[in-house]
Length: 121
Length: 294
Image 1: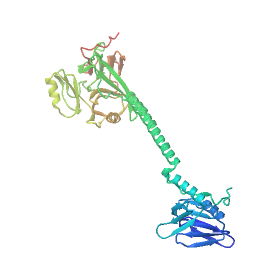
Image 2: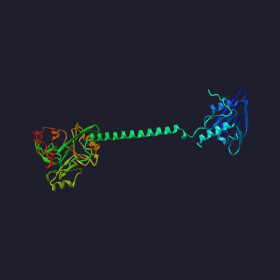
Image 3: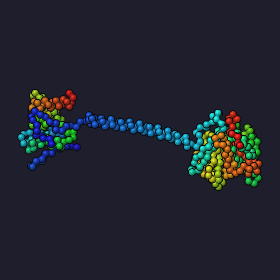
Image 4: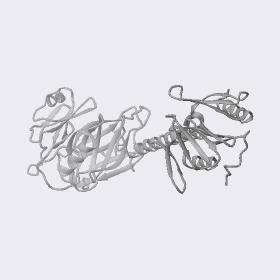
């Protein structure tokens, strides 16, 4: 059964299938939600609030979401490449989409360490 | 409360952790270990209960079994009569099992003071009108009476009893040749099947029975009809049985275990009838006789 991330403010309500979420980038008081179909939906919800909704609503096996710094949330299910020194992180399904993103060197190093520990590398 | 805005650019925070496969979680293996422990403990407890139950059932079986499954006749044991009481179909029964003794017939009242005689019961019926034996009767090879008005028979040869039901049997002739004994009575059980007889009255009953390959005497402790008595014998597992004289017939047993016991009409009454006859069991000569009666 699909899970949905549901976001709401005074003007709108947005439901996005959690399994299609790739990443969410902050742009001040706005957030851009990128999905597997490469579409971008901009919502007037701060990234911190979205993080809170993900924490509250997405409990099952739809993916592992990580907040990276102040401006990015990624779904680790689609993480295919990470290079802290280049501040580069790539999210892709190796088929229909590929997103090259940038984050701080230190944040990506922590993420790399975390993944290495998780996968016992 | 968690402050989701409180993060720096050089930090990360895990928001929702993907579920691990269940087999990677500690509680899964703890649950498996618990289940295994429960199963092992249950098996051990069940095994112990079954062993105790089997032992209890075995002990109960031994206590309740009215007759021994296998004849117990060690030659060194004295002749005796094992007495077992039981109840089949609400018919209380007493089973008398002669041990280390040889059966024979005798005419007239047996010498109850003879310590070698351990058990005796009246065998063939006596006619009321002429006080003669009813049916064929052979005593030590001599045929004292003829007739087959009752189909049940008992033939004794070489110390072995054969019971059956037939209007004529070659065993009658054989007993006369081999110095055996023969008498007729009502058949009660034939090849494991109860046999119906005409008399319907209730009385104390005695029967000569083949039970588990052993010859035993079974007596009813209450007054019973032939039908109920015979059915109880059949249900008890008797293979063949014929009646012995019931009602007020005289009988006795005598061994070191039970002492001397008798039942039925006073023996003096039966002494008036010359053809009164008994089947008796005499201790084997190499065994210790029962104590003398004083």
